[in-house]
Image 1 (cartoon, one colour):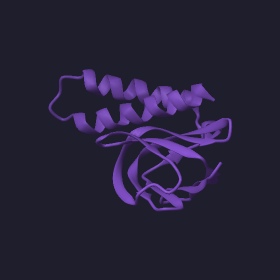
Image 2 (image 1 turned 120 degrees about the horizontal axis):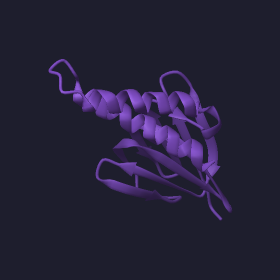
Image 3 (image 1 turned 90 degrees about the horizontal axis):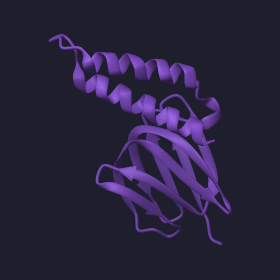
Image 4 (image 1 turned 135 degrees about the vertical axis):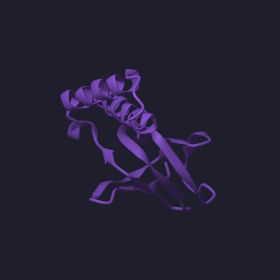
Length: 133
């Protein structure tokens, strides 16, 4: 079965570098399935889990936005942040979720609701990936 290199990079570090058979990512226009020799393109990513399928298994990575560049033999994810399941502190993610939900429920003019919504999405993404491991 043919493979391609998947690299996931954040401003701080390289999070993932493996040969994979397929990836499933969520772009701004919907879910994307990438196989070897895919046509090259670049797309922005949503805050969502990314599945990297290898043989009979898969790795799931919590990706918080960024861009995906698809090349013929390589996919590079330039993510704002990305975490493997074993790196996620679930208690910290649940606390972040609670804080974001409280901000969204507040009826004050000084609340940045878009920022609170993004924080909630990131927390829920991290919790989902950590619980799927």
